[in-house]
Image (tube, rainbow, N blue to C red; front, side, top):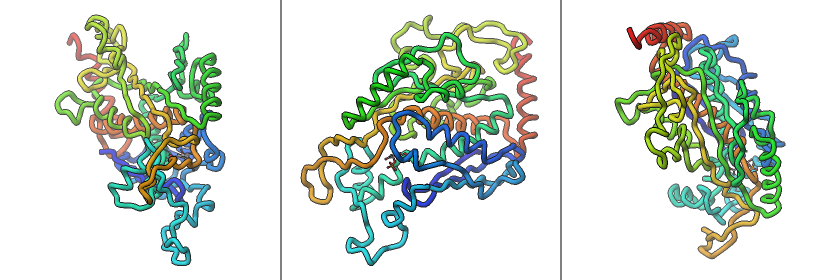
Length: 397
Ligand code: EPS
């Protein structure tokens, strides 16, 4: 079982995570995590906050001499913005303050944000108690945990990348030649897109939205390669890998839709134009000695991996903090008001792709350990290699 939890507020002292269930013996150094954290911080359209932060991890458990030990992996990332917020986010009461120690109280709740629903549910007077945790800053620790999952999966040749395919209604054309290293190719673009012409139009759209005090959403595609046939299961709803991927993706802030493979387009086409013909491919161990003529299924059939590339697309709504705010109700007075305009980003779709890579890595590492489970990397490898050797010769035997 692989599980993780995160804690920390956007403007608190630090963010923390515990990842439990990683086998011992996975090579791991902080630089591998930091490289992923850095990727998440990039992207044209982000606000000033990303110039303040230089996310870097400290391991405080579970890693020794450049290897995992099998113990829970504890990680910490300091918020460099903390000194500017110490008086607002102090965990201790501040009796010297007239307002009982609450500064920058937010009651002009933002439509589309967790502010209002969280305030009502948790019985808070200050929506800051909600928004500080609802902030996408939390995804820093998901990316940190995902970096560990990726280090584990990389031992077996699994690669995960993503690229931005649409922003603010502008589509990116797929590249003529698919890059060998998708993550690196996308990272070379300020929007993490592989279509330079669309990128220029998207940048103009972001600049226009910024001038208008508005925000933009978009879509990313995430691809994992090197997977074996048979991760996940058809037997029960909660073991189906597509369902687990869907949950992980929809848990990313502002993500409103997920597609696998052909996705929603499959609902409009006839079966012959949707399903992927199966061909013999002796020697293709990972895919069970067969291959698919196409990959419209996006690498999943019956809730299990086929061994073809796993392809997931995510749709992100525009960020809810608008500098030209929408109408709301001030929860302190009940009167009509303009929503609060906190410092924020115009768009964070490029970062969303990196976060989705991390979440996919965590789901896949979990499924991997269910199938090939072991307490050390070598034990997992033995189980994996024996399965592949068997499955390679299964068809036609
Ligand atoms: C966010 C608002 C902005 C973003 C933040 C998410 O932060 P601030 O309020 O400090 O300007 O930059 O994202 C991050 C800090 C991050 O690391 O991704 C929000 O309200 O959700």
